[in-house]
Image (cartoon, rainbow, N blue to C red; front, top):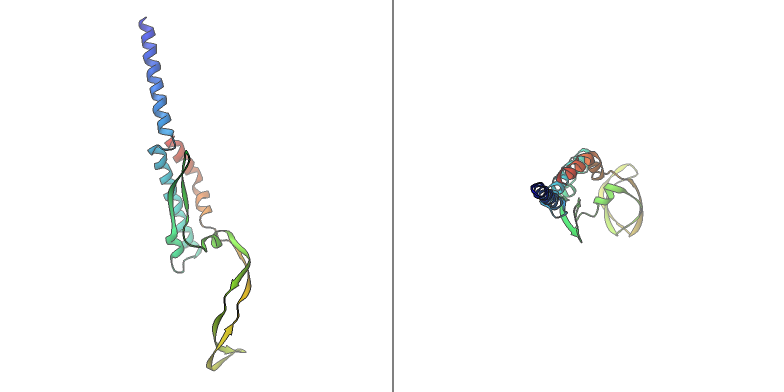
Length: 159
């Protein structure tokens, strides 16, 4: 009888440990959120470094737009990483091949036929289409690729 009680106590402690581990591995657990946060910080900082290395900094708007945020869809928690609010971020990440509209504008002409003009002239340029063939200069996806084994390890450690 005593051995039966001991076995029951052992089973209860095992069941309690399993429940604790299930709670720790749940999508809402703090360990999983912490692992997601570590992964997001790692990818974002690497992406900012990639932007600097590729010389994609003009005004700093692209690099300052790189951020991450938590999201929840149903039972799934995750992180969204990207350049939010900067329409040309996708242009640099994926490239672009196609036509874009150019609005009408004024152009100041100071040279003609290879010579400087004595007086600058203003010319009106009508609206037109311009063809762009630009290869992508990705900065975000390579950041993920570089650290994906570390990110998987973060998640395994959390679970």
